[in-house]
Image 1 (cartoon, helix red, strand yellow):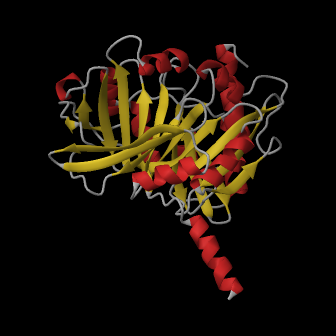
Image 2 (image 1 turned 45 degrees about the vertical axis):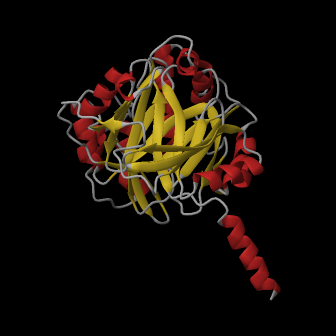
Amino acid sequence: MDTITEEKKTKDAEDFMPIMGTDYIELYVSNSKQAAYYYQTAFGFEAHAYAGLETGLKDRESYVVIQDKVRVVLTSPLKSGTEIGEHIDKHGDGVKVIALWVDDATQAYNEAVNRGAKSYMEPREEKDDHGKGVRSGIHIYGDTVHIFVERKDYNGTFLPGYRKWDSGVESKPIGLKYIDHMVGNVELGQMNEWVKFYQDVLGFKQILSFDDKDISTKYTALMSKVMSNGNGRIKFPINEPAAGIKKSQVDEYLEFYQGSGVQHVAVATDNIIKTIAELRSRGIEFLNIPDTYYYELEDRVGEIEEKTATLRELGILVDRDDEGYLLQIFTKPIQPRPTMFFEIIQRKGATSFGKGNFKALFEAIEREQELRGTL
């Protein structure tokens, strides 16, 4: 009887914050109209929804672009002195909102706040001719927030207050499927605080941990812990800097972002070779990986389906774990500040994050830092 009771308590504890997946990410950007065009033409996103002066908003303009299950909202201020403008002035273009899809946004908010989260937005019912939705929100690291999105009673284009948007741009999708994970950079000494936050407030579990021995080069190092929600659909690695001879990529990020925030968004594809070849043809820049990385690739990762010559040409990294292997590649920063970038990842069974690639990746980032004079 005691065992059954304990099992029930454990199950209840795990189920207090059911999150079905990532709903959308919202970036505050200096020019949402131009950013939307960039995401359509370069990354193959399709025009989806719009909100602005024509929909009754007076302070902001937002464009929503989609590709399969990935939804990106790009928002800019319409006036000076707004919270959005102040965010951009401080951080540059970057992720403000990581929206989480839930069945009950009010319950999720109440659970989170009762467990110690700081309120960002109290539950708010939003309606239009297509139904109603509920959103609420909490603060997380830096100026970033989680918005809980309840949309079971809504059948419109995106959310109430948005209208369907046809940009007239011919978008050609590149095979992006869903957000695999999002990495947050936090300041020294804060990683464990945010690990505890995700455990206590959102019911996440730590699934991996990397220390400065795992993630280091001759000059720099960092530490990371990976948090995952109950169904495993959401994964948030959290990085903090570690002592090194020179300034690490996390230090550089924190300096130019002026605080904690989302370092990169990893998006999954089923055919990374096709996806990256298309992105390169559209002018997207990736970190440069030296040919020496590929000399003993097959000896290190074992047999793979892809040709090493093709991977070397495209700069794609490979790593293997007990479940299989993965292929991954990282863009250069997508805005003037050396802050946010994208990762493209294809998993062939592997559930890890490319530990075997850390050294090559970080050395590639250091080469970019050296060119910027920030190493």
